[in-house]
Length: 145
Image 1 (tube, rainbow, N blue to C red):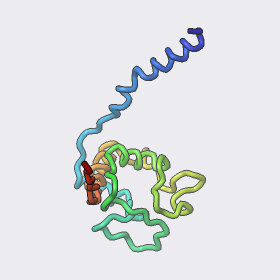
Image 2: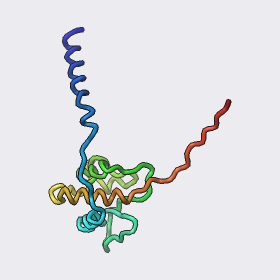
Image 3: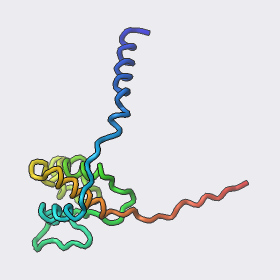
Image 4: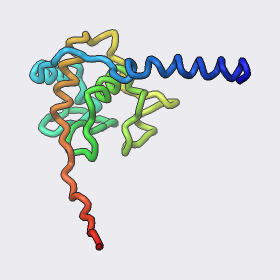
């Protein structure tokens, strides 16, 4: 085997060696749903988002991105954390892109310098409780013998 090939294989092996650690992610402490609801209200999330059971404040709201409700795939805790701390990571599908982004960046403000970690944990715990997996009919397989 030539030296460049050995070098590349070594780099790949070294990179893969840490994969099991990276895939474990991080773990935040448990959050408080009631505190998260208060953060949701205090941060005025309803000025751009809708959430079943919550009345938006009076105003002419151009933006209306729905949160919670039934979904075909559950929003994981990690996805929700990412959506809050890096809103441009994945833009909300099913919305008018001209209203939710400018030059590929979300119009959602970044709250990283405003929100404490405890508030983030509580907010995400609250939001996570608002999603429900949409019921579906399982596929029926007919076995032919």
